[in-house]
Length: 288
Image (cartoon, rainbow, N blue to C red; front, top):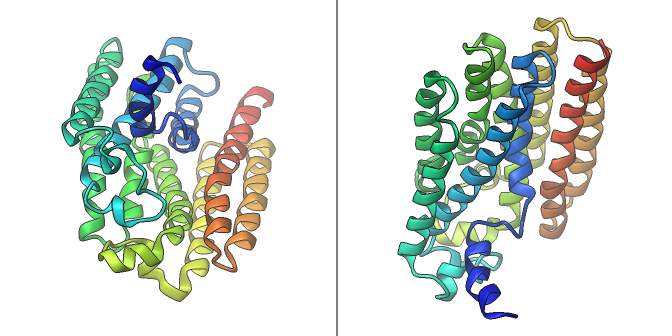
């Protein structure tokens, strides 16, 4: 490894650029919002701003998450090699990276309407405070769903100049989807989290975890169907939801045995759930 690569490697791992699944999970609902707000393909400049902003804010969120969890990660098998735990980076580096990336994300939206700037404030507060909710919320994944879905009202503010009821339906759908996939993720670390006293939905749901995940997937799909009805969308929208429901059923099959490796596979595969919904949205607007 070259000297430059060795210097950059811990920063890349800090912001998880080597693990892009999280970028997609944050990007899909943002794209749902942009397409619905625009009634199809949004302005290219707005699209690029939101895509790049998503990458920056997800990276900033990972950095602040590692700073918040630096005293826990060394006791969890999956996270004990993270840069702050291994000593490759000092804690202040994570704060600097998170702050710098958040600032870049804000500078990106300056060409957009001032209402978008205002919506970015709660979005930043949600992203920055989420890592600490594992100390006191029984289902911190619901809080994450709000944070991961806040690109939706921002997208409507940027494209349509308002945030109508359908935007909140999409946000609610994303919230339940997030609880579903992040509970699968939390099932991987459940044994370690119980020892550490960290609160997660996987611990809160207990033996009803698989049932709770199924209910969350169902609620997400129902809310997306209601949103499609309010928008008078057609068959392609529904076909996207049918494809997503098939993917959700595959996830439930994977996690039924609660094997950590299979739960992690199900979590990662949620990229395709979001893609299926998005494909239906794009096709419905393009072919209607």
